[in-house]
Each structure stands twice: as structure tokens, then as C-alpha cells.
Image 1: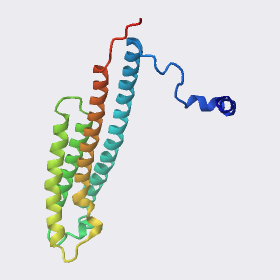
Image 2: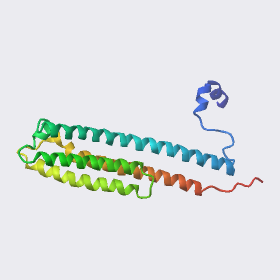
Image 3: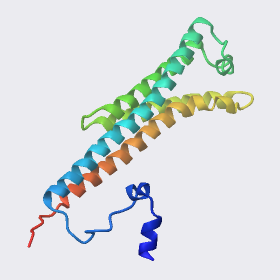
Image 4: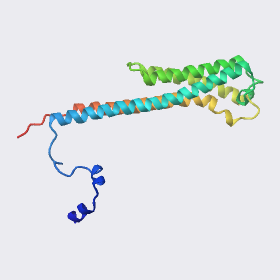
Length: 192
């Protein structure tokens, strides 16, 4: 059966198969070091990639908010999601709340890319600002005669951005800790 299976395998299949020879041979120190270094390098690349993806999303949301601020400053109440609040909120309050949202997104981006020990504090500050902002928007949304689901992104946008940043940072920190543990599990191989 094994001979028959080998005949039907193509060379491309061998690239994706696990090694079958020397499975029970322990790795020497150099092989272990090489494996751990490659895992550390791969983790660093993937960490940067995922942090960049979420930072880009936050940056795009911030750019949209800057456009919204610009539009509210020059043409007050022309945007539909601002016009809903025309009766209850002053224009300067909407502009200020959107600046605070931009600040919250910027803090989350700084937290994602900062290499200091305190990088998670930036994301928590972002979360705090986003929570205050969400309370502001929900309060005024509940004061409207009819609840508008199409503006639910106003309170949830910065809050979700900060929450996702916290989640991504925690997951990447945990995987980094696992790679560090793997380095501590390296053993000294003594050939007999």
C-alpha cells in the first residue's frame, strides 16, 4: 500500500507534507535556536501586519470624521446624520465630539504602534474617551422623537475601534508570550 501511495504522489504534494524520516530524533541546540528565531521573526512580521491593518481602519475612520467636521463647520446641518440633532445640539458640540472621536482613534493608533511598556495605556485612554463620547451620543439619540438606527455608528464607531485595538493588542501579546515560553523550553541535546 505504501509503495502504491508513493507512486501516486506528485512532487508538489511533498512540499506540503510533514517529514516522515527522523521524527524521533531530538533537535540539537542550533536547530532549536533556528526554529525559535524563525518563529520570532514570523511573529514580528505578522504582528506588524495586523497592527497596520487595524491602524489603517482607524485612520480611515478618522479621515471620514475630519471630512465630517469640515462639512459641519462650513455647511452646518447639511449632512443627514448631523441634521437629526439640529433641534437638541449646538453645532460646536457636534464638531467638538467629532474632534474627540478623532483624538480617541489617534490614541488607539499610537497604542498599537508604540514600543514602550505603556503602549496599552494609550489604548485604554482611547477606550475611556470613546466611552464618554458614546454616552454623549446615546443621550442625544434617546432624546430624538424617533430613534434612528442609521446613526448608531456615532456612539459605536470610536468605541469599537478602541475595543478592537485592545483585543488585537492582547492577542498579539499573548502569542508573543508563547514564543518567549518556547525559547525558555529549549533543552540541551547531548549526542551519545
